Image (tube, rainbow, N blue to C red):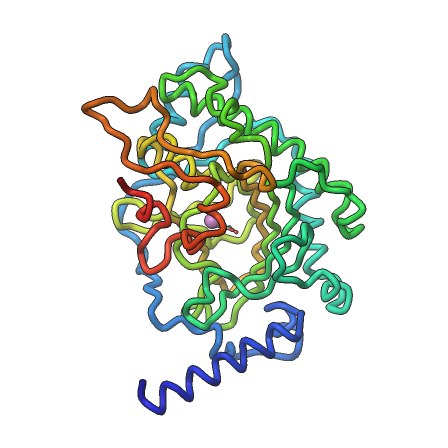
Length: 365
Ligand code: OGA
Ligand code: NI
């Protein structure tokens, strides 16, 4: 490495360390004074922000009205969900049963957490994955580049068999996070049933594999950015969950990659975004696709989102997941080896999609 770039690297690491020690996140930098230029540690020279796409393709919005078993739109909805899941791996749903009040309150509460005084938030600042409720400034996915993303994260981990004690949550979001979690779980169950049927399996097949047994909630906060073209909220990745349900506020930025085009996932009042995660791609033997997505930084802000990531309970994560037998045959052999969730999440697969390589690539037979 040339002396110059070594110095650059050194500078970046120093910035990252000071940022981490501030325990104040990106919002701390924005609040510290009038910001016209973003610090070097947020600049991602290699990111192709992509020009406006030419494609007319738009993300499906599936109306879940009358979609339960025996109702008039059951078959039609299964078809719509399946088509989206096997192509883009991402779609939106409306009339999904989560009350409007709950959606508004959880967005408000997550925003409220990030807008608490920095001394209060600092008490939650931690990179220890064992801490169930934590505020995170440095993004794991960005670490390999010694640079960070333009986003702050607040994690409420409910992926343990023992329920999260609501007292561990800060008051600003305590009751609504518990309430939202129940609603998100119910919607998750509905979606797993529809997705199971979409593969010709019994409605409860995925549920039997404990796909909806546990989840964690991630409240993301993307401050308005003075130089959005130089940085990114989250670079391209797939989620390592079975399924992710995401609620976004009115600020755009989320995009999904489809046929080499970045497609906007526009905020629609009342809608929830659903995306297939790596583990569902794995057990469906590649029929369902883990949607590749990212979040652009915006001049406007804050963008607030609440993600609910479904995965198996972490403290009994030795169950092996592999392609479902009913979906494989001699002509259609399993594409992946089985893996335990612990290995998938904690092993070297933890990288997600970095430099274009998804964690699933390492599991190919
Ligand atoms: C994620 C993610 C999207 C968003 O956290 O994995 O893709 O809009 N978030 O915050
Ligand atoms: Ni994601």
